[in-house]
Length: 309
Image (tube, rainbow, N blue to C red; front, top):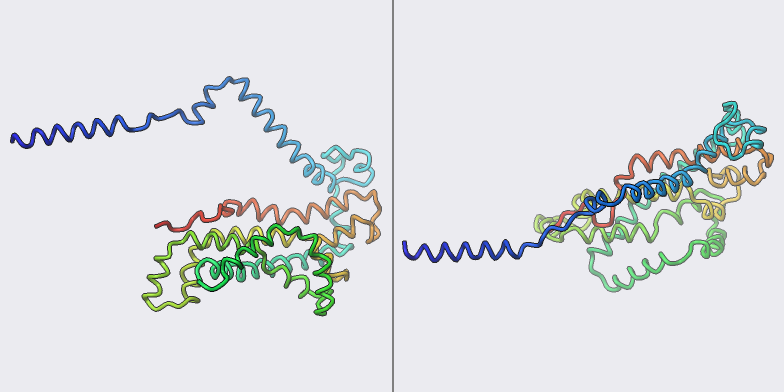
């Protein structure tokens, strides 16, 4: 009984010491924000609303002008609300080849997205998990490519198209885009956040490299794959310079090059046919906007969602 009393006293002393060492909670940012002056908060909200309106206003003009008549669009260019709502611009687009441009864009975007999911994930897995000579140097080369402006590669790429005989073909439009350094970087960083113990357990069970990649790593990398798919589809759908140097035939035009010819007047559209041009731009923007806002929660930071040790 006598021995237990000193032990109890020591335990109480330790608990008091730990309590004194606990950091004093600091007020959160929300508490600090609530304590600020109401006028400061009102001014902040006013600035944010103003910036949002300035950002959205051009899109509202595009949306409203697409439903205007030509005289209304010319006389009231800055007014996003049409005086008379008409759909003549949308019906006229079918005569300009818009449905064919849309089909080419879908084919290109889907092909490029699937290709990047396959090849970027394979390259990212190889660079993060497979040990081979020159792996670090190869990854450094990928990172260096990220800093090269794409515009400087257009003329060399055009010359390669001519030498390989793939100019003015779907092959020349798709093959150069089915992999990119940014996608490899995203997948490599995500694979590195997955514990190696999972692969070691699979190897003990007799799984090979392909089996581990397909059955273990890819399911765990689903957030990164969704991110890569959204970014790849958006980039290939909106790609203009790469398609411009890969083809010159109207039958291969995508939405970007077709609408570019329409806006520049090469297809016979008058310079004052703003509703026609805005309708084409609106229909071109809507699919990407819908996909982005629907799946934006999957655009995650590299490494998020992986299992931690």
